[in-house]
Image 1 (cartoon, rainbow, N blue to C red):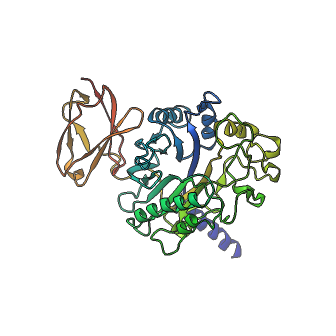
Image 2 (image 1 turned 120 degrees about the vertical axis):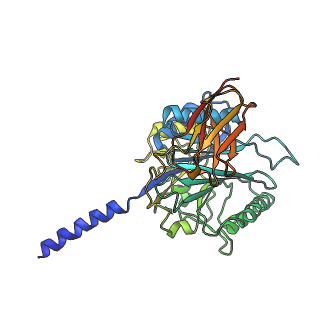
Image 3 (image 1 turned 90 degrees about the horizontal axis):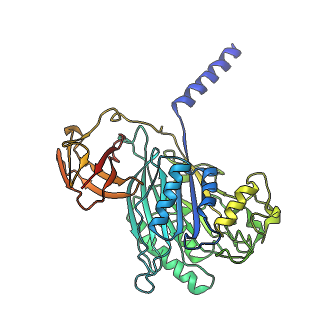
Length: 422
């Protein structure tokens, strides 16, 4: 009798495990160190390829990206070397320094696996110094039509350097962010990733982020609060500097600071739809070796079982920062939904376009639909609102000749291809 009960228990456990499938997503943030204007060492993208090929993030967030050409180059490398499903958000220039500098040479950006996520929107949050960039992603699950799950990923690069004046500037930037976050639903799943340039969790800007009275309260998933600067007890979360040698750009102080973070909204620690995976917060390339304090990341002092010399050497050559990674999990299942086998839109005059894109939308799909037009490298070119109309005629005469894709983010259907030939 006892044996039968045990067998029944394991059969039930196996069945429940199948019913409640879990999907895990890998997120990475990385300060790219003035890429690609910092030209030494040459051909730095080869080292980034080594790093990303090893980790293969589902969402890749960056700062210190210089220009759109470099952004496209990274996306092309990721598509060709890692996963053809990678796509990029719309590249935008920093605007927050227009009144006092207008250099606009350090941008934020987000890349994502388009088979797992749908980019719903992106918003620039201006501050007194540098923009925050908000990317709203929807999980591409079988329940997206009835129970959609969103990630609000915000990427930032706060004012650098120590001193009370710079702390005040960082706090002002965060206050600008908090004013924007007040407009979001309080239960939003928010990720804040960036180079914070903070030396301690008691800095007023960090305290403000964790303020429990905020509409969105952030928490440190690593649970490593304190005074990080040159404090070897925090070496497990150090992210800078990978170098002591000069001539490579960036900081040269050796491994002694925690500047880079991925924070989550508090609800992501405890909710069930989308949540932080316990103990998944890692600094990529950091072997938590006490001998690494104030050393170069590719030295034998930084050896360990997690990250090999070849990975640490690529990190050393690419940037003075290390990337930060976390994992998120959902109980929903990725895949196709009920609309997957129906094509909701069709070309009226074929998919060879001179100037006018003519489409017919099936009546059951016309309500509140938005069409996105992407170019061949995954850049969002145009957004078209169907305005509840069956027939769409859109002037695309301003677009260059080439291959384009129409994507319906609300529905899980294959993109439609069309060619512009003027």
